[in-house]
Length: 548
Image 1 (cartoon, rainbow, N blue to C red):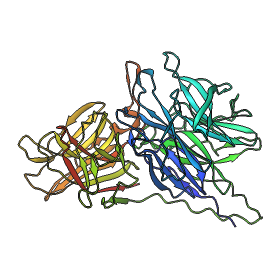
Image 2 (cartoon, helix red, strand yellow; image 1 turned 90 degrees about the vertical axis):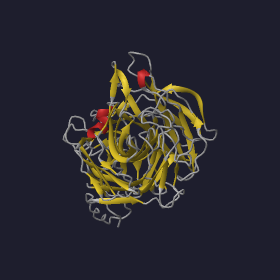
Image 3 (cartoon, rainbow, N blue to C red; image 1 turned 120 degrees about the horizontal axis):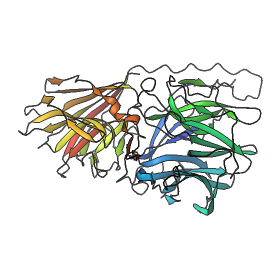
Image 4 (tube, one colour; image 1 turned 180 degrees about the vertical axis):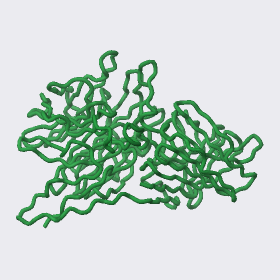
Protein backbone atom coordinates (compact mmCIF):
# COMPACT_ATOMS: atom_id res chain seq x y z
CA UNK A 1 0.00 0.00 0.00
CA UNK A 2 1.40 3.37 -0.97
CA UNK A 3 1.01 6.57 0.98
CA UNK A 4 -1.72 8.89 -0.09
CA UNK A 5 -0.96 12.25 -1.65
CA UNK A 6 0.15 14.91 0.81
CA UNK A 7 -2.18 17.74 1.73
CA UNK A 8 -0.16 20.91 1.47
CA UNK A 9 -0.82 24.36 2.87
CA UNK A 10 0.40 27.29 0.78
CA UNK A 11 2.61 29.17 0.77
CA UNK A 12 5.10 26.41 1.49
CA UNK A 13 7.89 29.02 1.81
CA UNK A 14 6.33 32.05 3.53
CA UNK A 15 7.83 35.49 3.25
CA UNK A 16 9.84 36.72 0.29
CA UNK A 17 10.73 33.58 -1.70
CA UNK A 18 9.92 34.44 -5.33
CA UNK A 19 10.83 32.87 -8.67
CA UNK A 20 11.11 29.23 -7.51
CA UNK A 21 13.20 26.83 -9.55
CA UNK A 22 12.66 23.17 -8.66
CA UNK A 23 14.68 19.99 -9.23
CA UNK A 24 14.28 16.55 -7.65
CA UNK A 25 17.52 14.90 -6.53
CA UNK A 26 17.95 12.02 -4.11
CA UNK A 27 14.22 11.64 -3.53
CA UNK A 28 13.71 15.25 -2.46
CA UNK A 29 12.71 18.39 -4.31
CA UNK A 30 15.20 21.23 -4.05
CA UNK A 31 13.93 24.80 -4.51
CA UNK A 32 16.04 27.85 -5.34
CA UNK A 33 14.54 31.33 -4.93
CA UNK A 34 15.54 34.91 -5.69
CA UNK A 35 17.35 37.06 -3.11
CA UNK A 36 17.99 40.38 -4.94
CA UNK A 37 20.28 42.72 -2.92
CA UNK A 38 20.41 40.37 0.09
CA UNK A 39 23.25 37.97 0.93
CA UNK A 40 23.77 35.06 0.75
CA UNK A 41 22.48 35.03 -2.79
CA UNK A 42 19.97 32.32 -3.81
CA UNK A 43 18.17 30.60 -0.93
CA UNK A 44 17.74 26.83 -1.06
CA UNK A 45 15.11 24.64 0.60
CA UNK A 46 14.35 20.95 0.17
CA UNK A 47 11.50 18.60 1.02
CA UNK A 48 10.56 14.95 0.69
CA UNK A 49 6.81 15.46 1.15
CA UNK A 50 6.10 19.12 0.21
CA UNK A 51 4.78 19.69 3.74
CA UNK A 52 7.98 19.92 5.78
CA UNK A 53 10.73 22.09 4.31
CA UNK A 54 14.36 22.15 5.36
CA UNK A 55 16.19 25.48 4.93
CA UNK A 56 19.63 24.94 3.44
CA UNK A 57 20.69 28.57 3.65
CA UNK A 58 22.13 30.55 0.78
CA UNK A 59 24.52 29.55 -1.97
CA UNK A 60 26.30 32.76 -2.93
CA UNK A 61 27.80 33.92 0.35
CA UNK A 62 31.31 34.82 -0.80
CA UNK A 63 32.67 37.67 -2.88
CA UNK A 64 34.12 35.21 -5.40
CA UNK A 65 30.56 34.04 -6.10
CA UNK A 66 28.62 37.29 -5.82
CA UNK A 67 29.25 40.99 -5.26
CA UNK A 68 26.33 43.16 -4.26
CA UNK A 69 27.95 46.52 -3.51
CA UNK A 70 26.06 49.19 -5.42
CA UNK A 71 23.12 46.93 -6.28
CA UNK A 72 19.97 49.01 -6.71
CA UNK A 73 16.86 48.32 -4.67
CA UNK A 74 15.37 45.07 -6.02
CA UNK A 75 18.49 44.55 -8.14
CA UNK A 76 21.06 41.83 -7.50
CA UNK A 77 20.09 38.17 -7.94
CA UNK A 78 17.03 37.66 -10.14
CA UNK A 79 15.31 34.35 -10.92
CA UNK A 80 18.01 31.72 -10.32
CA UNK A 81 17.70 28.36 -12.06
CA UNK A 82 18.68 25.07 -10.42
CA UNK A 83 19.16 21.85 -12.41
CA UNK A 84 20.95 18.51 -12.06
CA UNK A 85 23.25 16.78 -14.56
CA UNK A 86 26.42 14.66 -14.44
CA UNK A 87 26.16 14.28 -10.67
CA UNK A 88 26.20 18.04 -10.12
CA UNK A 89 23.77 20.79 -9.23
CA UNK A 90 23.98 23.53 -11.86
CA UNK A 91 22.97 27.00 -10.68
CA UNK A 92 22.52 29.83 -13.19
CA UNK A 93 21.85 33.34 -11.92
CA UNK A 94 21.81 37.00 -12.95
CA UNK A 95 23.34 39.83 -10.93
CA UNK A 96 21.38 42.90 -12.01
CA UNK A 97 23.23 46.17 -11.46
CA UNK A 98 20.82 48.44 -13.41
CA UNK A 99 17.20 48.26 -14.50
CA UNK A 100 16.06 51.90 -14.59
CA UNK A 101 15.95 54.19 -17.60
CA UNK A 102 15.19 51.37 -20.01
CA UNK A 103 18.47 49.54 -19.44
CA UNK A 104 19.03 46.20 -17.71
CA UNK A 105 22.64 45.27 -17.02
CA UNK A 106 22.45 41.60 -16.07
CA UNK A 107 25.60 39.49 -16.35
CA UNK A 108 24.63 35.83 -16.10
CA UNK A 109 26.88 33.28 -14.41
CA UNK A 110 26.94 29.57 -13.61
CA UNK A 111 28.31 27.64 -10.63
CA UNK A 112 28.16 23.91 -9.86
CA UNK A 113 28.37 21.71 -6.76
CA UNK A 114 27.91 18.04 -5.93
CA UNK A 115 26.14 18.97 -2.69
CA UNK A 116 23.87 21.96 -2.01
CA UNK A 117 26.02 22.74 1.04
CA UNK A 118 28.92 23.30 -1.34
CA UNK A 119 31.61 23.99 -2.12
CA UNK A 120 30.30 25.77 -5.20
CA UNK A 121 32.70 26.27 -8.07
CA UNK A 122 34.06 29.63 -9.18
CA UNK A 123 31.38 31.18 -11.40
CA UNK A 124 31.60 30.92 -15.16
CA UNK A 125 30.43 34.01 -17.07
CA UNK A 126 27.81 33.25 -19.71
CA UNK A 127 26.42 36.43 -21.27
CA UNK A 128 24.52 39.62 -20.42
CA UNK A 129 22.06 39.76 -23.32
CA UNK A 130 19.07 39.28 -21.06
CA UNK A 131 17.84 37.94 -17.74
CA UNK A 132 15.88 34.94 -16.41
CA UNK A 133 18.40 32.39 -17.70
CA UNK A 134 17.68 28.67 -17.31
CA UNK A 135 19.48 25.49 -18.28
CA UNK A 136 17.77 22.58 -20.01
CA UNK A 137 19.53 19.20 -20.12
CA UNK A 138 18.35 17.04 -23.01
CA UNK A 139 20.38 13.89 -22.53
CA UNK A 140 24.01 14.71 -23.34
CA UNK A 141 23.04 18.09 -24.79
CA UNK A 142 22.34 21.20 -22.73
CA UNK A 143 20.83 24.54 -23.67
CA UNK A 144 20.74 27.97 -22.06
CA UNK A 145 17.43 29.77 -22.44
CA UNK A 146 16.74 33.43 -21.59
CA UNK A 147 14.76 36.57 -22.31
CA UNK A 148 16.52 39.07 -24.59
CA UNK A 149 16.23 42.57 -23.18
CA UNK A 150 15.68 45.39 -25.68
CA UNK A 151 16.71 48.81 -24.34
CA UNK A 152 15.52 50.78 -27.38
CA UNK A 153 12.69 53.23 -26.69
CA UNK A 154 9.36 52.07 -28.03
CA UNK A 155 10.38 48.40 -28.23
CA UNK A 156 8.65 47.29 -25.05
CA UNK A 157 11.82 46.04 -23.37
CA UNK A 158 11.72 42.52 -24.79
CA UNK A 159 13.08 41.07 -28.01
CA UNK A 160 11.68 37.63 -27.23
CA UNK A 161 13.44 34.48 -26.09
CA UNK A 162 16.67 32.90 -27.29
CA UNK A 163 18.43 29.58 -26.79
CA UNK A 164 22.14 28.76 -26.95
CA UNK A 165 23.90 25.42 -26.78
CA UNK A 166 25.87 24.88 -23.56
CA UNK A 167 28.84 22.50 -23.27
CA UNK A 168 28.68 20.92 -19.81
CA UNK A 169 32.19 19.45 -19.99
CA UNK A 170 33.84 22.72 -21.03
CA UNK A 171 31.37 24.85 -19.03
CA UNK A 172 30.87 27.37 -21.80
CA UNK A 173 28.39 28.43 -24.42
CA UNK A 174 28.88 27.06 -27.92
CA UNK A 175 27.85 28.84 -31.10
CA UNK A 176 25.44 31.70 -31.58
CA UNK A 177 22.03 32.06 -29.90
CA UNK A 178 18.94 31.07 -31.85
CA UNK A 179 15.52 32.69 -31.48
CA UNK A 180 12.80 30.65 -29.81
CA UNK A 181 9.76 30.81 -32.06
CA UNK A 182 6.39 31.33 -30.36
CA UNK A 183 3.16 31.03 -32.34
CA UNK A 184 0.51 33.70 -31.80
CA UNK A 185 2.36 35.36 -28.91
CA UNK A 186 4.12 38.67 -28.69
CA UNK A 187 5.12 41.25 -26.11
CA UNK A 188 6.72 40.60 -22.76
CA UNK A 189 7.40 36.91 -22.05
CA UNK A 190 9.79 36.03 -19.22
CA UNK A 191 10.84 33.34 -16.75
CA UNK A 192 11.31 30.64 -19.44
CA UNK A 193 11.90 27.00 -18.44
CA UNK A 194 12.10 23.94 -20.69
CA UNK A 195 11.47 20.27 -20.03
CA UNK A 196 10.81 17.25 -22.22
CA UNK A 197 8.02 14.70 -21.99
CA UNK A 198 7.70 12.07 -24.68
CA UNK A 199 8.15 13.59 -28.12
CA UNK A 200 7.42 17.15 -27.03
CA UNK A 201 9.44 19.98 -25.58
CA UNK A 202 7.41 22.03 -23.12
CA UNK A 203 8.12 25.73 -22.66
CA UNK A 204 6.89 27.25 -19.39
CA UNK A 205 6.83 31.05 -19.21
CA UNK A 206 5.75 33.83 -16.87
CA UNK A 207 3.43 36.20 -18.70
CA UNK A 208 1.38 39.25 -17.82
CA UNK A 209 3.98 41.12 -15.77
CA UNK A 210 4.54 40.60 -12.04
CA UNK A 211 1.27 42.13 -10.81
CA UNK A 212 -2.35 41.03 -10.69
CA UNK A 213 -2.27 39.77 -14.31
CA UNK A 214 0.64 37.40 -13.69
CA UNK A 215 0.19 33.86 -14.99
CA UNK A 216 1.93 30.63 -15.92
CA UNK A 217 1.63 29.68 -19.60
CA UNK A 218 2.69 26.41 -21.23
CA UNK A 219 3.47 25.84 -24.90
CA UNK A 220 4.96 22.84 -26.69
CA UNK A 221 6.88 21.88 -29.80
CA UNK A 222 8.63 18.88 -31.32
CA UNK A 223 11.72 21.03 -31.90
CA UNK A 224 13.67 22.68 -29.11
CA UNK A 225 13.74 26.01 -30.96
CA UNK A 226 10.03 25.86 -31.84
CA UNK A 227 7.68 26.92 -33.15
CA UNK A 228 5.87 26.54 -29.82
CA UNK A 229 2.10 26.36 -29.69
CA UNK A 230 0.41 27.56 -26.49
CA UNK A 231 -2.03 25.30 -24.67
CA UNK A 232 -5.44 26.01 -26.24
CA UNK A 233 -7.02 25.82 -22.77
CA UNK A 234 -5.26 29.04 -21.77
CA UNK A 235 -2.98 29.75 -18.81
CA UNK A 236 -1.98 26.83 -16.62
CA UNK A 237 -2.36 28.95 -13.47
CA UNK A 238 -3.41 32.51 -12.70
CA UNK A 239 -5.37 34.59 -10.17
CA UNK A 240 -6.19 37.18 -12.83
CA UNK A 241 -9.73 38.51 -12.61
CA UNK A 242 -10.42 36.99 -9.19
CA UNK A 243 -9.37 39.54 -6.54
CA UNK A 244 -11.07 37.62 -3.72
CA UNK A 245 -8.60 34.74 -3.87
CA UNK A 246 -6.26 34.78 -0.86
CA UNK A 247 -3.31 34.07 -3.17
CA UNK A 248 -2.71 36.68 -5.87
CA UNK A 249 -0.10 37.51 -8.55
CA UNK A 250 0.43 33.79 -9.21
CA UNK A 251 3.07 33.10 -11.85
CA UNK A 252 6.65 32.12 -12.69
CA UNK A 253 6.23 28.34 -12.57
CA UNK A 254 8.66 25.43 -12.44
CA UNK A 255 7.60 21.81 -13.03
CA UNK A 256 8.90 18.86 -11.03
CA UNK A 257 7.95 15.21 -10.52
CA UNK A 258 8.26 13.59 -7.12
CA UNK A 259 9.58 10.04 -6.72
CA UNK A 260 6.00 8.76 -6.36
CA UNK A 261 5.34 9.81 -9.95
CA UNK A 262 3.07 12.77 -9.25
CA UNK A 263 3.75 16.00 -11.12
CA UNK A 264 3.72 19.38 -9.38
CA UNK A 265 4.22 23.03 -10.16
CA UNK A 266 6.18 25.41 -7.94
CA UNK A 267 5.16 29.02 -8.47
CA UNK A 268 5.18 32.41 -6.78
CA UNK A 269 2.17 34.15 -5.27
CA UNK A 270 1.42 36.92 -2.79
CA UNK A 271 -0.97 37.21 0.15
CA UNK A 272 -2.33 40.77 -0.03
CA UNK A 273 -4.15 42.32 2.91
CA UNK A 274 -7.64 41.69 1.57
CA UNK A 275 -8.98 42.10 -1.97
CA UNK A 276 -6.81 44.58 -3.85
CA UNK A 277 -4.81 45.15 -0.66
CA UNK A 278 -1.08 45.64 -0.24
CA UNK A 279 1.51 42.85 -0.24
CA UNK A 280 3.84 43.42 2.70
CA UNK A 281 5.14 39.84 2.68
CA UNK A 282 6.29 40.03 -0.92
CA UNK A 283 6.01 37.10 -3.30
CA UNK A 284 6.10 33.66 -1.70
CA UNK A 285 6.55 30.11 -3.00
CA UNK A 286 3.50 27.88 -3.39
CA UNK A 287 2.90 24.52 -5.09
CA UNK A 288 0.04 23.09 -7.15
CA UNK A 289 -0.70 19.56 -8.40
CA UNK A 290 -0.41 18.86 -12.11
CA UNK A 291 -2.32 16.23 -14.08
CA UNK A 292 -1.87 15.32 -17.73
CA UNK A 293 -4.58 15.13 -20.39
CA UNK A 294 -4.86 12.26 -22.83
CA UNK A 295 -3.45 14.47 -25.58
CA UNK A 296 -0.40 15.47 -23.53
CA UNK A 297 -1.19 18.85 -21.94
CA UNK A 298 -0.51 19.62 -18.27
CA UNK A 299 -3.36 20.98 -16.15
CA UNK A 300 -3.61 22.45 -12.67
CA UNK A 301 -7.10 21.47 -11.49
CA UNK A 302 -9.18 24.62 -11.47
CA UNK A 303 -6.31 26.68 -12.84
CA UNK A 304 -6.29 28.89 -9.73
CA UNK A 305 -3.86 29.20 -6.82
CA UNK A 306 -5.19 27.61 -3.63
CA UNK A 307 -4.17 27.73 0.01
CA UNK A 308 -4.81 24.02 0.66
CA UNK A 309 -4.04 21.52 -2.09
CA UNK A 310 -3.62 17.79 -2.55
CA UNK A 311 -2.84 15.77 -5.63
CA UNK A 312 -6.00 14.33 -7.22
CA UNK A 313 -4.21 11.24 -8.52
CA UNK A 314 -2.89 8.32 -6.49
CA UNK A 315 0.71 7.35 -6.97
CA UNK A 316 1.29 4.59 -9.53
CA UNK A 317 1.17 1.16 -7.86
CA UNK A 318 2.24 -2.24 -9.09
CA UNK A 319 -0.77 -4.06 -7.59
CA UNK A 320 -4.48 -3.24 -7.32
CA UNK A 321 -4.06 -2.35 -3.64
CA UNK A 322 -5.70 0.92 -2.75
CA UNK A 323 -3.67 3.96 -1.79
CA UNK A 324 -3.74 5.04 1.80
CA UNK A 325 -5.99 7.92 2.73
CA UNK A 326 -4.39 11.35 2.37
CA UNK A 327 -2.74 12.67 5.47
CA UNK A 328 -4.68 15.49 7.17
CA UNK A 329 -3.70 19.01 6.17
CA UNK A 330 -1.34 20.89 8.41
CA UNK A 331 -3.35 23.09 10.74
CA UNK A 332 -2.91 26.84 10.43
CA UNK A 333 -0.09 27.79 12.73
CA UNK A 334 -0.99 29.20 16.11
CA UNK A 335 1.34 31.67 17.73
CA UNK A 336 4.86 30.33 17.20
CA UNK A 337 8.05 31.76 18.64
CA UNK A 338 11.51 31.40 17.19
CA UNK A 339 14.37 32.68 19.33
CA UNK A 340 18.01 33.13 18.34
CA UNK A 341 20.37 33.54 21.30
CA UNK A 342 23.36 33.78 18.95
CA UNK A 343 25.16 30.86 20.58
CA UNK A 344 26.47 29.39 17.32
CA UNK A 345 29.59 30.30 15.33
CA UNK A 346 27.65 31.63 12.35
CA UNK A 347 24.31 33.14 11.49
CA UNK A 348 21.44 30.70 11.00
CA UNK A 349 19.82 30.16 7.59
CA UNK A 350 16.92 32.46 8.50
CA UNK A 351 19.20 35.52 8.43
CA UNK A 352 20.38 37.59 5.49
CA UNK A 353 22.62 40.63 5.24
CA UNK A 354 22.12 43.68 3.07
CA UNK A 355 24.47 44.30 0.12
CA UNK A 356 27.48 42.66 1.76
CA UNK A 357 28.31 39.22 3.03
CA UNK A 358 28.33 38.28 6.70
CA UNK A 359 32.02 38.45 7.60
CA UNK A 360 34.26 39.62 10.44
CA UNK A 361 34.84 43.01 8.86
CA UNK A 362 31.54 44.18 10.33
CA UNK A 363 29.92 41.47 12.46
CA UNK A 364 30.98 38.78 14.91
CA UNK A 365 29.43 35.95 16.88
CA UNK A 366 32.63 35.32 18.86
CA UNK A 367 33.69 38.76 20.08
CA UNK A 368 31.25 38.38 22.99
CA UNK A 369 29.80 35.06 24.01
CA UNK A 370 26.13 34.52 23.06
CA UNK A 371 25.91 37.91 21.40
CA UNK A 372 25.86 39.18 17.84
CA UNK A 373 28.14 42.19 17.54
CA UNK A 374 27.38 44.50 14.62
CA UNK A 375 29.71 47.36 13.71
CA UNK A 376 27.90 50.49 12.62
CA UNK A 377 27.62 51.00 8.88
CA UNK A 378 26.69 53.71 6.45
CA UNK A 379 23.46 55.63 6.05
CA UNK A 380 20.27 54.00 4.73
CA UNK A 381 20.67 55.74 1.39
CA UNK A 382 24.08 54.19 0.75
CA UNK A 383 24.32 51.27 -1.66
CA UNK A 384 27.66 50.33 -0.11
CA UNK A 385 28.46 49.29 3.45
CA UNK A 386 25.16 49.05 5.35
CA UNK A 387 25.11 47.07 8.60
CA UNK A 388 21.74 45.36 8.50
CA UNK A 389 21.03 41.74 9.45
CA UNK A 390 17.49 40.84 8.42
CA UNK A 391 14.96 38.08 8.02
CA UNK A 392 11.88 37.85 5.86
CA UNK A 393 8.52 38.82 7.36
CA UNK A 394 6.62 35.49 7.20
CA UNK A 395 3.10 36.43 8.29
CA UNK A 396 0.79 39.47 8.31
CA UNK A 397 0.68 39.39 12.11
CA UNK A 398 4.08 39.03 13.69
CA UNK A 399 6.27 40.48 16.44
CA UNK A 400 10.01 40.97 16.11
CA UNK A 401 11.99 41.86 19.21
CA UNK A 402 15.63 42.12 20.19
CA UNK A 403 17.70 42.84 23.28
CA UNK A 404 20.20 45.53 22.32
CA UNK A 405 23.21 46.95 24.16
CA UNK A 406 24.59 50.15 22.67
CA UNK A 407 26.33 53.25 24.03
CA UNK A 408 25.86 56.00 21.47
CA UNK A 409 28.12 59.03 21.74
CA UNK A 410 26.02 61.31 19.58
CA UNK A 411 23.17 61.63 17.11
CA UNK A 412 25.23 59.93 14.39
CA UNK A 413 25.19 56.64 16.32
CA UNK A 414 21.99 54.56 16.03
CA UNK A 415 21.18 50.90 16.69
CA UNK A 416 17.92 49.01 16.88
CA UNK A 417 15.23 47.08 15.02
CA UNK A 418 13.70 47.83 11.64
CA UNK A 419 10.84 46.95 9.37
CA UNK A 420 12.71 47.39 6.11
CA UNK A 421 11.84 47.22 2.43
CA UNK A 422 14.50 49.25 0.65
CA UNK A 423 16.60 52.41 0.93
CA UNK A 424 13.51 54.58 0.44
CA UNK A 425 10.93 52.77 2.60
CA UNK A 426 11.51 51.65 6.21
CA UNK A 427 10.81 52.10 9.92
CA UNK A 428 13.58 52.15 12.54
CA UNK A 429 13.11 51.91 16.33
CA UNK A 430 16.52 52.68 17.77
CA UNK A 431 18.87 53.83 20.50
CA UNK A 432 20.75 57.04 19.92
CA UNK A 433 22.02 60.04 21.94
CA UNK A 434 20.32 63.39 22.31
CA UNK A 435 22.15 66.72 22.25
CA UNK A 436 22.82 66.44 25.97
CA UNK A 437 24.52 63.08 25.52
CA UNK A 438 21.73 61.02 27.09
CA UNK A 439 20.83 57.66 25.56
CA UNK A 440 17.26 57.75 24.26
CA UNK A 441 14.90 55.54 22.30
CA UNK A 442 13.51 57.15 19.17
CA UNK A 443 11.82 56.14 15.96
CA UNK A 444 12.57 57.17 12.41
CA UNK A 445 10.76 56.46 9.17
CA UNK A 446 11.28 56.82 5.45
CA UNK A 447 8.42 56.92 2.95
CA UNK A 448 9.46 57.07 -0.71
CA UNK A 449 12.70 58.75 0.21
CA UNK A 450 11.29 61.29 2.68
CA UNK A 451 12.81 60.70 6.12
CA UNK A 452 11.18 61.75 9.38
CA UNK A 453 11.99 61.31 13.07
CA UNK A 454 9.76 61.22 16.11
CA UNK A 455 10.02 62.49 19.66
CA UNK A 456 11.95 60.65 22.34
CA UNK A 457 10.00 57.54 23.32
CA UNK A 458 12.17 56.66 26.29
CA UNK A 459 15.02 58.48 28.05
CA UNK A 460 17.46 56.21 29.88
CA UNK A 461 19.07 58.96 32.00
CA UNK A 462 22.47 57.32 32.06
CA UNK A 463 21.19 53.84 32.87
CA UNK A 464 23.35 51.15 31.37
CA UNK A 465 22.42 47.66 30.29
CA UNK A 466 20.29 46.08 27.58
CA UNK A 467 17.17 47.59 26.06
CA UNK A 468 14.33 45.45 24.69
CA UNK A 469 12.99 46.83 21.41
CA UNK A 470 10.00 45.37 19.58
CA UNK A 471 8.04 45.91 16.37
CA UNK A 472 4.51 44.52 16.23
CA UNK A 473 3.03 44.01 12.78
CA UNK A 474 -0.76 43.74 12.69
CA UNK A 475 -1.72 43.58 9.05
CA UNK A 476 -1.53 47.13 7.69
CA UNK A 477 -0.47 48.58 11.06
CA UNK A 478 2.84 48.65 12.91
CA UNK A 479 3.35 49.38 16.62
CA UNK A 480 6.56 50.03 18.56
CA UNK A 481 7.51 48.94 22.08
CA UNK A 482 10.58 49.46 24.27
CA UNK A 483 11.58 48.45 27.79
CA UNK A 484 14.70 49.24 29.83
CA UNK A 485 15.66 49.75 33.48
CA UNK A 486 12.07 49.63 34.64
CA UNK A 487 10.87 52.11 32.02
CA UNK A 488 8.44 51.20 29.27
CA UNK A 489 7.13 52.62 26.03
CA UNK A 490 4.30 51.33 23.92
CA UNK A 491 2.43 50.28 22.18
CA UNK A 492 3.06 53.41 20.20
CA UNK A 493 0.60 55.07 17.86
CA UNK A 494 -0.10 52.88 14.83
CA UNK A 495 2.16 53.38 11.86
CA UNK A 496 1.26 52.61 8.25
CA UNK A 497 2.97 49.28 7.55
CA UNK A 498 1.93 49.33 3.88
CA UNK A 499 4.83 51.74 3.34
CA UNK A 500 6.84 48.49 3.19
CA UNK A 501 4.63 46.75 0.61
CA UNK A 502 5.52 45.75 -2.94
CA UNK A 503 2.89 48.03 -4.39
CA UNK A 504 3.88 51.13 -2.42
CA UNK A 505 7.59 51.03 -3.13
CA UNK A 506 7.29 50.84 -6.90
CA UNK A 507 7.97 54.28 -8.38
CA UNK A 508 8.20 55.85 -11.80
CA UNK A 509 10.08 58.97 -12.74
CA UNK A 510 8.90 61.13 -15.65
CA UNK A 511 7.06 58.18 -17.10
CA UNK A 512 9.94 55.75 -16.67
CA UNK A 513 10.72 53.08 -14.11
CA UNK A 514 12.60 54.31 -11.04
CA UNK A 515 12.25 51.62 -8.35
CA UNK A 516 10.93 48.07 -8.45
CA UNK A 517 9.23 46.30 -5.56
CA UNK A 518 10.49 42.73 -5.72
CA UNK A 519 11.83 41.85 -2.27
CA UNK A 520 8.99 41.97 0.26
CA UNK A 521 9.52 43.35 3.77
CA UNK A 522 12.19 42.27 6.26
CA UNK A 523 12.52 42.54 10.01
CA UNK A 524 16.08 43.44 10.91
CA UNK A 525 18.84 44.46 13.29
CA UNK A 526 20.33 47.71 12.04
CA UNK A 527 23.32 49.73 13.25
CA UNK A 528 24.45 53.10 11.87
CA UNK A 529 27.66 54.94 12.55
CA UNK A 530 27.60 58.01 10.34
CA UNK A 531 31.03 59.09 11.64
CA UNK A 532 32.62 56.15 9.83
CA UNK A 533 34.22 54.80 13.03
CA UNK A 534 32.09 51.62 13.11
CA UNK A 535 30.83 51.89 16.68
CA UNK A 536 29.27 48.53 17.50
CA UNK A 537 26.10 47.24 19.15
CA UNK A 538 25.65 43.87 20.85
CA UNK A 539 22.48 41.85 20.34
CA UNK A 540 21.83 39.33 23.11
CA UNK A 541 18.80 37.71 21.53
CA UNK A 542 16.32 38.18 18.73
CA UNK A 543 12.88 36.60 18.61
CA UNK A 544 10.16 36.32 16.00
CA UNK A 545 6.62 35.45 17.00
CA UNK A 546 4.05 34.80 14.30
CA UNK A 547 0.36 34.88 15.04
CA UNK A 548 -1.11 33.26 11.90
